[in-house]
Length: 174
Image (cartoon, rainbow, N blue to C red; front, side, top):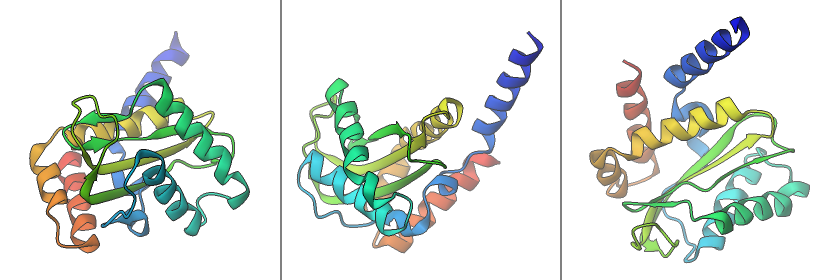
């Protein structure tokens, strides 16, 4: 019982302290995705993480497979123009992710049937259920805010998108 209390206390403290910018570096923000379908969006974002040395090139196809397999279970297009493709993978040692915007919108089998414009990609180590869930909850709390979605969708460039992420992190941590 004592262990469970400490675990829950740690888990909830991680959720409060976690910031999006902790697992999505500025360099992993894409302001104009070129992809026009679900799989190519995921691949473009995964390639961005590979280019930042967050993913080993030899694991690229396996990670893509895990993400696509997750999409087949149920679309991560959660509606309101947002998708959150995510998976855990044996090659990931520290939670990492990318954030991207499509100016045209992408058919992503979203729950509301609408095109997706904003994408959060999340990759976590296999043994990090608590951190993975905390990151998903952090993303969820941010994307529920219609102002956030509108500001990011209409941001003039990558720098402004990053600034908005930082602002929302600061607003949520106060």
